[in-house]
Length: 496
Image (cartoon, rainbow, N blue to C red):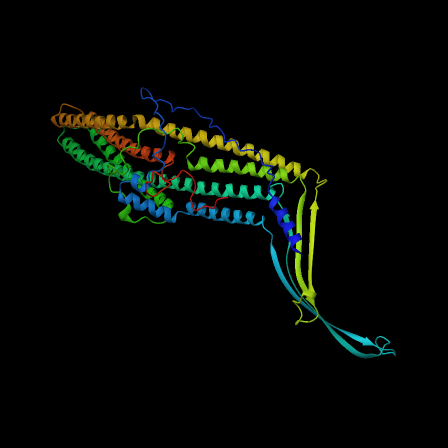
């Protein structure tokens, strides 16, 4: 092969990819309101230029060391997160494979052939009728270097396939970060629920002790003829009801631990579990003021959906390119001789060059169906992207609605507990003085018990609301805060 042909091949290869049949990618406009809904007299939060929430590291958001250690354990061991990470590796391998099609596959080969044949010279023998007078051995040696069926990507089919694989890789990376954010939120919610149920169990046990004391008091008064048998029955009923609650919360705590161990990927150490009360400040007191207008498009699940949608554009380009001719090249150079000593001599050198063009004529509508499928898939993924945006909007709006009133709910519930406690103490004193019935006292005691349990629920709701708001705003993708961290997939991913 002379240098003119080599130059011609290089020039043809350089023209590859000059035509791109993929349509332009217009970024979809979010189909959501521009403002968050207001809650009662609380106006909607005003948008700001940038988000501090998505770049707030989870180690800075969670203030309780036990909770931090549990989250770290889950990130290291959770199987769903491991699957998401392996999906990235699979997409990365697919991207490398699609990129390799843009380059020729060069192969080297060497072969040796030895054969023996008989000579004949008149006469007859029993087998062939000829007389074998001698034999010869022939040999052939060859070495070759070349490539076969290298496609010149004139119309961008291979490049669009590579682009689609690249977008799939970025989508997988964003999906992995979305899985991490959801996992962190789930771990925190399960951990706080365990703390709340432990506190509820403490209240139930305390109430059981009080009910047993009341039962002893009522029995003593009954023995003196002051209390009726109905009072004794009511007191006994209150004791049994408290026993049921103690057993129920004991089972709930065991289930909470099982749920926490599942998301943590193993048994969480007892030293990392919450105590008998919800911690006062397990997370930061509040998130930065102002919700950015770009908060939804910065969420990893939305980013993942958009990368998938962008990859569909490249897939359409690849499907369009299938309608056009395909040019492929096969070339080889080598040596062939009958002796090993002269194998690489110039006189034994050989070469071949075979260009080939293929133009589809009739395929029963297969290419048209593939193009239609690519367009339909893009429409499906566009609807999925819009649905993801709408879901994200609702999640943030719901979290903001709770945030607007949860502090007042906790405050009102705590005031109710204090009022019920006073009412119970007064009713018990009146009963002991003989001026009130035990049924009235029991009613006040039950009201206090219910109010205390509900107060635990309100405090749990306040903490889990902060966790939820942190999650739906895209927080949790980083371990530590970094205001310069970009809201995009991992920087270590390859670039086109």
